[in-house]
Length: 336
Image 1 (cartoon, rainbow, N blue to C red):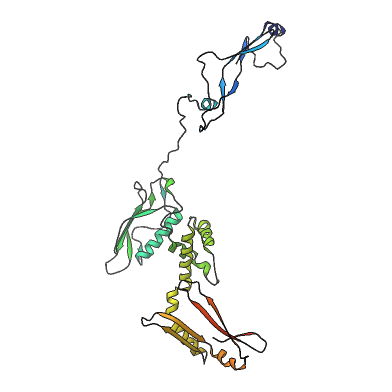
Image 2: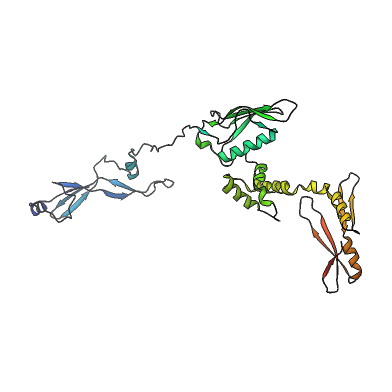
């Protein structure tokens, strides 16, 4: 907007002084930005934003009059004016490019280091990748050889290990480059090297001497805070199950030791009655257990027997039947 001073205003300020209300005055005129609002297409990201029009404002004795912009006077978008781009040109936003760098995996591995088995070597590499938040892929693997490289094809990190002699299970590192030359952006806290087995081995000490231990949500929190990795609920559940197996053994192992357990019960508790029923393929069907002390005490109980049943919700399902009676104080007395 252009504002021109009238002759009266010029004469009132011949001494060069002003009251501060016309700081923008020049000798004959000053520029003013005038806002106008023009709606754009529906779907446009800049709908109903103000645009600048350059207009001329002249002043006379009767007051100021505003004229429309001259023909060909362009409309200027303030957003484009800030970015310095023309209204008909796309705005080029700055981009960030990832640069390569070198960093160590932080391990103590070296050429010539021995491991008792290939499984021990894999577990060691899983711990290293979990702490360093990087991944590797297997180039070649068999019973006597294991070759792995960083998941970035341009990275220099790699390891090659093989058996000392074919007859033994010991593995030795033949070649090892522990420096990464890939971008730091390739670091990932949720990669396939963090298996449920690794999680279970790390969280297993928290299940020693307790009845329940952490739930799957607690295992997720442990992995995030202590190990620095993100795992799914399903992986946390499998890790918890694996930790239970490491501390208490598997369910299959428990069924296998039932005969030995019953043998020790009858040896240490005279009069105990036990029985295990299996089918023709030696598959478990059911068992019976009654302690000798409970059988002897039944002669002094009230002649009432109650049967209760509950459903087992473990992997192999089934039901648990319990026989009880009452003593002289009307309390429950277990029988079998």
